[in-house]
Length: 492
Image (cartoon, rainbow, N blue to C red; front, top):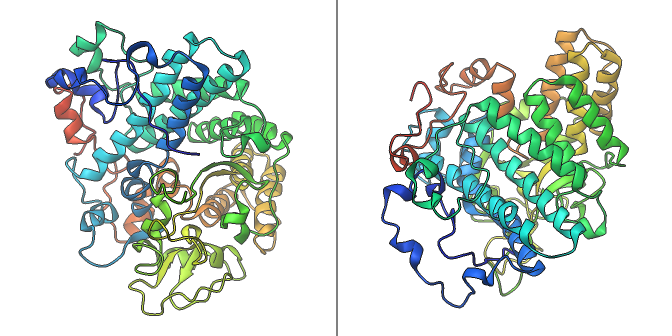
């Protein structure tokens, strides 16, 4: 799906950075009056069904934007965890070491990039939700587009609230008059509870209006994607029965585990029966900026397939049980030969790389290192593990073991026959780690919600401060742009 740029009403609230939350009132607004070149303005946009399609397409395209998929995303979600170190070579992007070591401050640039990327996406969804209802078009298609926008607004707010805690809730595009009001633009942080409430509302409404998956939905948000994201949100809120109810709904839609774990992360395995949602990536010859993703390029074997960042830790290697087929599918070792026949450089700078980001050499390199690797955001295996965790917390050991063992047996491991509730809790948490490692950026946030981030990360030698580093600092640039309306997290 191409990343389509589109024009919007002159002087409308366009968020290209986090200025949408706090900065426009602080700066000259003359730049807002520049006439766009070569595109319609005023009433020329958000007037037809095609405009609605272009607008929602821009939301999908923004998923691959640098701040949402590369350094900022990987730094906050993965390099902070016990699954990966910075990687690459000493001195290259050394600022990422601050995330690895928890020595970052509020002025670190990737924090601002992550904030900007999420709010840019939220602005795009709000443009859809504000303007598309007024367009005369097929009612079913309109309903679908609005539901997709709600799904993605919830997705990006979930990213924000897990990283920063409470954040400003912007749910509409300011109308004329509001754009000149600093109090309207510089809104304060909502509480984390308020943000989660909005996320749950958006996902619930999206799930009600999105269709089930099918050939026409390949790459698009579906009912299964919305229900799966809602189940994860409820997991983080410890609403155990809701998690179980949602998982049951998802299973009723026909999702299941594929037989071969390795195949999930190959291009031929995109959108298989296990996939609830993926971020699309495909090189379009002659249009290198259109749809490929640097998520894979950034993590590929340095000077062979990519830049070499996000080095899997030895601790992650040791987390896999003997015979666990997921080890070879997750970690690419220096000097190995892949099933596709690529010999990994035995002299590569790092001993290990993310195999889930591996793009074989036979894939086109027209746009530099191959980038054709979808990012798996939600899979049915995670739904099973969420239901297992919720069932165990509610004392339903039989259901918890059944779901856990479906995932383990697929990985070539023996089933767990019995365990106490606490033992099973630890086993399920461990299973989440090895099943989802280096994939969707959950590990650090999992450790925080489980209440053991300090214990686990300090054991890895990280300078993690309990009571502080569970949340990232609010970017100082955003506090400045807000005129001091935004407040800093404790300890920063």
